[in-house]
Amino acid sequence: MRILIITPGQPRTTGNWVSANRQRKGLQSLGHTVRIVETTETSGDLERITEDFVPDVVNLLHAFRSGTLWLACRHAKTVPMVVTLTGTDINHGVDNPAQKPIIQQIMTEAGAIITIRAATKETLSRDFPEHCSKLHHIAPSVDFGQRPFDLRRKCHIPRHVVLFLHPAGIRPVKGNLELLEMFEGVVREQPCRLLFCGPLLDKEYGQRFLNAVQKRTWADYAGEIPADAMPAAMRTADVILNNSVSEGFANALQEAKCLGIPILARDIPGNVSAFEPGHGGLLYDSPEHFIRQAVLLAKHPEMRRRLSRPTFPPHSLMDEARQMERIYHSLIPHP
Image (cartoon, rainbow, N blue to C red; front, side, top):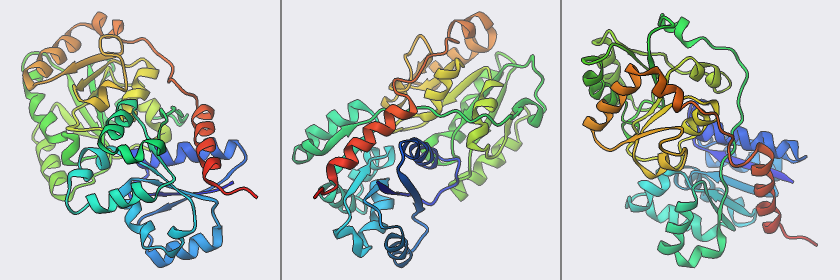
């Protein structure tokens, strides 16, 4: 099979790109030919790429951003299409008047709709009963890169200092600035460090965030870390944080769970589905709750050890690829 994946034009360290590359790797290992295209291409460029590549199926990662480009391509009427709904699509797009028509059109024209969380499939089945037969849940696998990366050395953080790491793009939905402000209450009670890593995805918010980081001696921003170096970087942390307002599925938390790094995450559906609260980590539902639990984790190494139990993802890279392969095959006409 020849598979074309269309993903939003973002830094290669974002979740969409990590997912696209992981899926490409798995599908290629099954003998398929896979090409990834970004939405930074024009519709004319996409038409030329499609004519040259001749895909058997197209998979859109992000219904609105990838779908807008694909619908403008004349091949959209002839090539079978699958859409993987992202957290942004589900949590924000379907209620946004500017995005809703595109998302609904993509869902209507798609031969299959993939969700990353099982609960999302149930919600969509209720809200869009006309698409029930097309809905599929595929749990993401984990593909750990092996590149060495000493995050503590890069940021001059001694080994004995308790380090909280927040791996996420810098944009409002990820709550980076708000997390920085909450952490004031933690360091007042217990000395520790807070480190952020991820691409700057919102210029105005990012500048406010960088200015705020510079005013705090206990916080730093490590910039972007290559995806294949993230496991090594995460292993240097004592606790992995997630302060997102919403998530489709938190890949970084599933990776932390598999590595056995304690998690402290906001209590939202996309985080709850990534790890088992009380085993791989803890959840919080208010700033006060966050501060209380972060202080306990910083003070008590035995508490962190109790939460440091590596677990395996529910599906391997090959399991994920085979599930996608079956969906693609079902959409391709056979003589």
